[in-house]
Length: 602
Image (cartoon, rainbow, N blue to C red; front, side, top):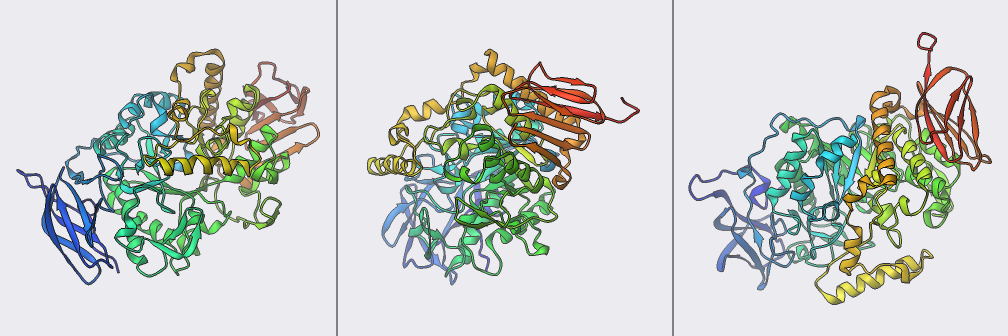
């Protein structure tokens, strides 16, 4: 049974004209507790329990008030639905009245993801200051690049001042080191003013290890299942209705109260739910209902390594109704082909044939045997369009989860980086860039934390080294996540943009994105219509996308690609590339985009 909202920001609220009072009482769900006390700026207020386990105080919320809860005499603890944690995960909660912010985006509509270019960024390392406000100053660069959608890595409250954000514990509160809630709203509002949509990465598969007090209040976890983070989030055990409500309300809050245009759901394969209506199906349905209420286009993207079409198939067709998903197979096939790496999950990839399958089928493993997994993996797609898949050559996972956080700029030459960029931006899917990729940033993106508990910090550092030792990487190469230098190394250096090689790569990305925008064939999501031929021995790859031919030479000798139709060169990574009668000539390690002309334009 659905419950009333636990905090004033999860339902309509009215501000008192004089005192800033929100006509919503303090409420918290704690079904097993015998006594809950509201501690409000030093005063204690008794709370009453209803039959559904919700406790209510005879006291209305006011914007800016600091409060916490005593649970059976323990605490005080932050509100599980705290809107703001100005002193961090162990501090008191602060009331936030979302109706007080003055938005300027009343007529805003997000561009469709189907024709978009996504840009993933981490607020803490995207700028020198690492704040919501500082990110605003860099938006013109993204606009000039041709980006349409920003994707923020998680911004909810996590332990310490530095972190990736995937160990959040106060899921309704923006991280205090990035700025106030209104600062995040100003960032979203500023993006909309420039025509940029904004997606938010949210994590519902686990809570972080520090400041995680939700278990004090209710059955947010279940011992029925185990995950890499411990007990699973409770989505189908006793009390799970309110836990599901908690996560759905969180998703709706970001979309409604912060005006985000969509969400990226982290690792949905770790959401264990055996109920008849899967949590993802419930969530997608509620987002669709909010979309109709708001009159704004909203999108939900999932990260999943299941290669299961049900994630993105419509609810009417027995799917979960998620709009799109990340495709790791595309990344792995491209990365292994470009770098030659074969360790870990890359052992399942590496040939030009694997990449050709990624282009034509989206999933490389769709019911095929996987050597890495030692079993059959995935299920074949049938009729889903290419814009249901978000693909990348680099992202926070694939860069940051390397031992030293190396980008492609530390692994391969600029020639190969240009090839990777072209193959990404001419693919029949939704391309996503990772911050700094477009200029070949010299800075790595390493795993960093700032846990205040020294013992927890030590455990994280040692665990990181053990994890990479199992992958065959030298533990001594793994930077200490707790060291401030690890974070500092990961901050983008914007002064690099004008250096010759960086400027050259940036110009290439801009040209590719402009060409994708100008050529309808490159935005066609019918990946089954992609024609791919390849020569594994010579390392030649030819991709036909309607009126555009992409010729790629990964070999160490010059290559000639025969072309029957009249054609003209659109773009080439090497000035030595030439279109001649009946052929394209490419230098080693280069790629070219060629427009195929009909007789009238020849």
